[in-house]
Image 1: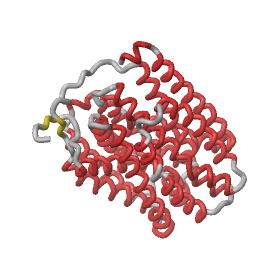
Image 2: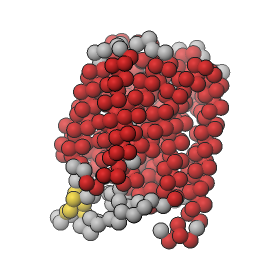
Image 3: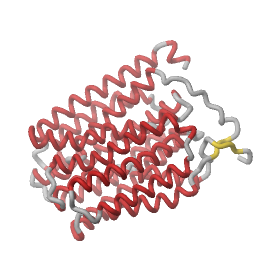
Image 4: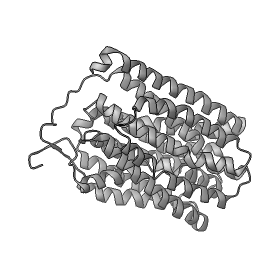
Length: 386
């Protein structure tokens, strides 16, 4: 550990802790989606379409930033990108707390997404070049689960008491704390790992990326409407808030379990089970007439994506040791997430929650097909050699 060269994160708990915090902050949209959309509808009087478009502006900015950053990952100043990115996002959310205007809020969300997406891309690329990407991403996923419990327990009641601007103050504060922590962002590598071949991505890697993107879209379609589905079904805001706390508690488990099962399960088989299971849960949430079915499906819904993505993250890291593909993880996750809230709001407005269920089945079928093609590529001699 004495002779370190720039490029790979040091295997210290300080470095891991910073990466875990940066991961949670950048992926907070996965946690906050139902609260975010619900706050904009209830406290800002936005329509479902307007609320979806506002959140989509943040996610679209993150996607654009990731697509720009990922190919340049090896040449970027990492500390500046991460600390500066989260710092700018903090300022954008601080500004959002002081305006109710739809246009200004959408613009500030776009700026925050561009900044946070840059920081998250560098974070994921750095995790991808660690000694054990699957294990470190599992730790980061567990941190996301812990953060989700705290978020769901504290933020919805605070919003109910102090208004919708509370959400943006919380997000701005989280981004600011992470920016300060990122001033010590890990930027060194173990000796012997500095030189990584930058070749073209394999077809299997591309199909894996498309499959993760499709599952992220399904996640956003249903999860962004979770609060509204519960309220419009008559379950009550308090019951929905309690369910979100349960969701956070359940989300403590999948990444940790995935880390434990690293060498025991085939990542492609995990994905082939996860994609249709996610679609079934989405249909149950969208069409549930009673609270027990709705709550049971919702409580495990995000866990499916978290568990699957941990395995796919490790697989893609093996297919592309340069870290470029994993630096595009925000694009994989947030392309779907970016489209999801706006698309879900539009479909729910014009076709109801039944239309949302039908769309979830279609997207789930596409994700399953992508992972089937990954499995097919893995069976070819060329893929096995790679």
